[in-house]
Image 1 (tube, helix red, strand yellow):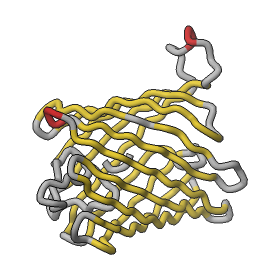
Image 2 (cartoon, one colour):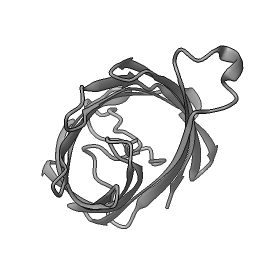
Image 3 (cartoon, helix red, strand yellow):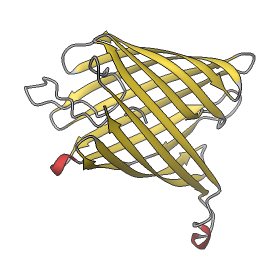
Length: 222
């Protein structure tokens, strides 16, 4: 994200708990899936306001998930890795704890990061709330002869009126040999059509990251 999508999944925490729209510890239902594409623009935090129309960096991401069965979700993650280089990873996600409000899922991905073969194991822990969800996603990007990078995303999602969603996320990570970073990335998800939503958000580096940015994405259920 993320991820995640577009499917208002309802689980059973006191009969009203809501699970997230995308990814994380909740697998896609069998025969269902979602796709998302996002464009991100960023600037240095000390850059004058009048220079904001000229973004220092732009990158695009594409994310796809499909529920192959009740216990297996397959996906593709294209975009930017922890190191800042390009990534193309295919993955499978499977439940470790799949009932009740607490969910735990494992993930194993294979692909390329910065043109180097990579293995990407991961673990997601989620908890359904009455009006939203909490989720933690931990990933390790293991590259041949390049060491291992780590990423941890913490997400709070809240349901709003008219099928809108508010997502508050802290994105953190550590590249091999560099200091750890953390950034805040809140966003608002709004319905466009029955199977299409738009996400609009911003990000602000907190430590180890001196950038600010904005992003916009489209989420499609299928």
